[in-house]
Length: 335
Image 1 (cartoon, rainbow, N blue to C red):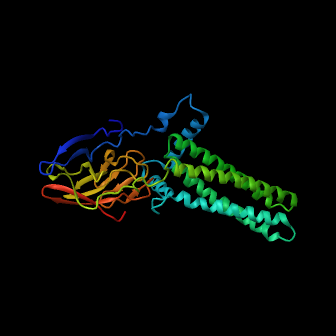
Image 2: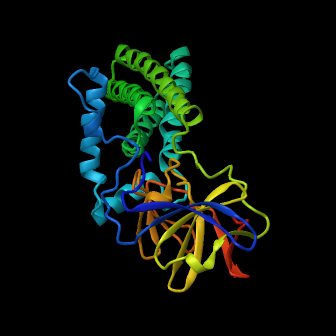
């Protein structure tokens, strides 16, 4: 099976009492972390015949992953912070409001100043401050955006690269505009305003591409948002065959769920990674922590919370009980 964990086995089970059946996936907690992801690695996608943009993307992603994508704890925590894991919301889209809002304000100030430079000198000063604020915000947006982009691939990655190129273009234009605004020559101020208008056009098109990534490609969208779950307990498998420290993939109300028996307790969360839809049942289990095989997001099986990103949204969790020799699960409505 494509993308199947090398230490995972799938079994068909039939409940003797109620007849419920389904596929069960189990993963040993001692499973190797070297599972094969269904997403090709950056190095595997590289090719001499690749377009220039693809080679640039490969090199840039590799550089980002060296700095913040390592499985070592300090870089991993930094990446989680930049992803917005601590906030429970992607950080990048929140920061982008700063440069876009500031630079739109610059355009308004510049128009006012161009109408009458002598009467509206205050508008020129306001534009200068707004340009500087936008540049600072753009730097933060660039860092968080590149962090999110490092986990993309395919057409999503291509759109993201164009998104970054137009944002960098806007940033460079506004830096030039800022330098010109510090001069006293009126001609330089007019040129600075014109360059600012060009920068605004670039950043607005970049924002359009960012929306394309989110609304068309589903970048940074919670992939468990539409899971309905079950309103009542549903038997998923006999308790007799459930071993300690193994992940079991079951289905409840048509939704894939992973079940864990750990230290004589049962825990269950959605089997679909909230970050990009990865199959958590094919991931690595360490104690009561499961790691997604696609991008390395780690979740606590006890409550579904995100321990490390790139995921920012906790997993939907299920209440588990044992009744009449069967394990039963019910969606907890807090998610």
